[in-house]
Image (tube, helix red, strand yellow):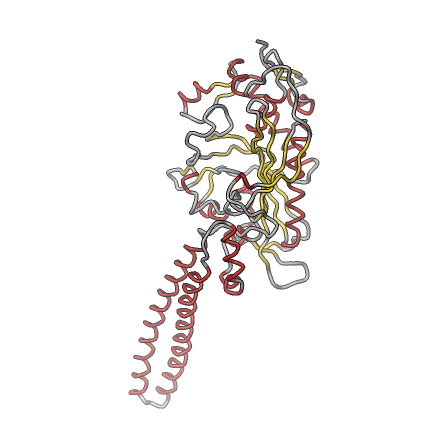
Amino acid sequence: MYDIKWIRDNAKLFDEGLARRGLTARSAELLVIDDERRKAVTAVQGAQEARNAASKAIGQAMGRKDMAEADRLKAEVAALKDAMAEGEIEQARAETALNAVLEALPNLPLPEVPTGADEHDNVEYRRHGERPGFNFAPKQHFELGEAWGEMDFEAASRISGARFVVLRGELARMERALGQFMLDLHTREHGYTEVSPPLLVREQAVYGVGQLPKFEEDLFKTTSGHYLTSTAEVTLSNLVREQILDDLTQPLRFTALTPCFRSEAGAAGRDTRGILRQHQFWKCELVSITAPDQSGAEHERMLSCAEEVLKRLGLHFRTMTLCTGDMGFSSAKTYDIEVWLPGQDTFREISSCSVCGDFQARRMNARFRPKGERSVQYVHTLNGSGLAVGRTLIAVLENYQNADGTVTVPEVLRPYMGGVEQIGKAA
């Protein structure tokens, strides 16, 4: 969401930012609507002042026993009351029209974000490690899991339909181990506070992070009007909604390991094999709340925390700076971490880390009062995957597979696996 006053003062900059997003200029349209709103506000204020003056004059006229003048003023007050009501209706109409446009516009990209149309214009930021070498043709994760009988898509389909999976035995244990490892790393070493949030949220919470109204088709909604969270970003960010924080000298950092639910409405025909794109999956989410002057440095820090998970697992990855055409709706700048998958012979996204500026904070009305100051400011919000558990499971299976069809357990996971060093069944 935007501050219309900022748009009025920076119309050219606003339109240039939208153009980099591939959108047409909107400032002129918005300012026309805002002029109508301001005109209505001025009219209501003028009518209120005139009404107050007339009401005072009524008392004076009655004091002089000038009943004719008092009656004339009473009629004037009644007319002014009607004019105020009409003005308030017009003001509300203009505000609704203004917000309808503003809430559908994405965040503006930061100046350093590369301009581009889609993922082909993303820019590599850095990479870590080397691709593993195999003296055999590496299999995809679902080929391994199905051969063991521990990745069951048929049972999941009978129970829930497409884009679900049943994990059994060692695979279920490794999924749990990965999530616990991520959570422990972020809380014990990276300074995040663990949160166990609700999975059902109100419409206002989903609106607050920018998923509504534009992306409702991607969400699951219950008959009670609640939404299932597509990511813990929703709940963790909304912890500060409608709050004025006393101080924000140090960033607030939250993490949660939760199930996530996505309809994948726009993914028909994509990644239909395996567990890469599911309606339900686990993810360890990272969220930071900062003062405006801290958010840039916090973005780099959050990225390094997510990357560290892959480093500890010994996985090869690259980090990409997303171009303007590939960024999410609420993001001002996004890094994607892409892990190497030998079975697919390609990199696939495993984490996105975004800084949103005050875009979400305005929608949530989340503010803070800088130390020693009386005025308040909007906070800056950041979010990132630290990591998507299912995709990390895919990466471990494909990168640590052996020629006989088994998978070596990465050393860092063995304490979470009861010391087990290898899983799977030899072919």
